[in-house]
Image 1 (tube, rainbow, N blue to C red):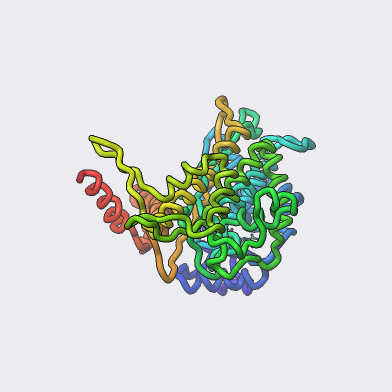
Image 2 (cartoon, rainbow, N blue to C red; image 1 turned 135 degrees about the vertical axis):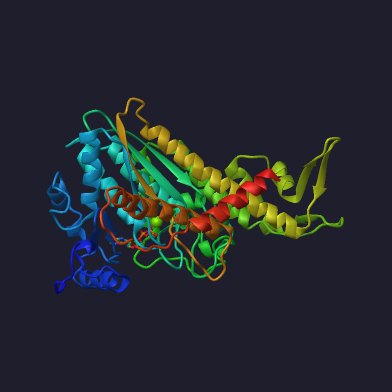
Length: 450
Ligand SMILES: Nc1ncnc2c1ncn2[C@@H]1O[C@H](COP(=O)(O)OP(=O)(O)O)[C@@H](O)[C@H]1O
Ligand SMILES: [Mg+2]
């Protein structure tokens, strides 16, 4: 049978199911803006790199509501609808796994899934701070602090997240919990051209003048943690606008004005900390603040963090070693002091992020009596740069683990089922990465034993 000119909406309808056939089919569909295609019960989404509002409006959501799977064109709403209906009809909790390489569209897809679930489980006609509103508005807040421009994606998630949406016995959203994983800490003090640091730093520099003055900020080009790259602005994005949008989202999520101020004080303090430089002190292997500029930035950082200036300076210039006999304070040379400055900045930032997630969770609230839940997993996708670090290793390992989970369900379990039922079936060859996983996981076991 000849394949239809516009491609098929389900890969299982292809006469030849092989890589060229699959790619050809996806390309044909993409040409007519058909970005979704099924492979049985799995949805493949191609990044359109343009807004397609008609695909996601309220009318579309109405259409997919309760429609039998496969009856309408492939769509992310259909996947969410299946999950929701399975939960209602069978009382079963389930999870939706979104995977793909960096920039493929996972986070956007996750947001659409969440929107649909909020549509199905939300209360009609209510506005303001409902649970579903809070869940949706947690996205821009988390993105401001956990996303950055990379070479692959202007809004790349630098953390993984698992959002658990809880429902009551009527299928209404009654609570939610957000779990995050593995924020990329190194980005706080080290970025390479043409990437950016976390969005929040640029947003704050573009805040209304009185706030910029309050935090003693100004041109982002004057901060070491930002000026290692020549990229400051993103095409089509206004940091000033996004600053206000983030503040509004924080209001809806339920973060108090006082806490918001504290959050941005910490963000500003990190920028000031990064501008503290060191030079050799009188004693060997010791250091002092380089100049008045460094003194100013350290003082500002201490003020913003509301901590003692002397203690902060000591923490950067000296290392405390605790031996069974005594506590030794050893001074650090300028290179070591810089390492400890960056270490402090990274730790403060990642704790700020964790605190933010905790605060959002407390504010949204979990429902201890929830009957069932739908989880949506959005982790960061496979990455391979010119130079790759331990962070890429962890990201890629996680992706391989998820791929194995996928293989397990799609190939292994299916094929075992066929064998059990003695169905005549030729095995599908697939690359099984279990050996690689074993290698890495067993290395961990050995190192634990040592
Ligand atoms: N369904 C979509 N509609 C419109 N634009 C999209 C869609 N999916 C992705 N994009 C665009 O691609 C960019 C990268 O997508 P994102 O979801 O952040 O990728 P990932 O999370 O897989 O790294 C988004 O910022 C957006 O501009
Ligand atoms: Mg993402």
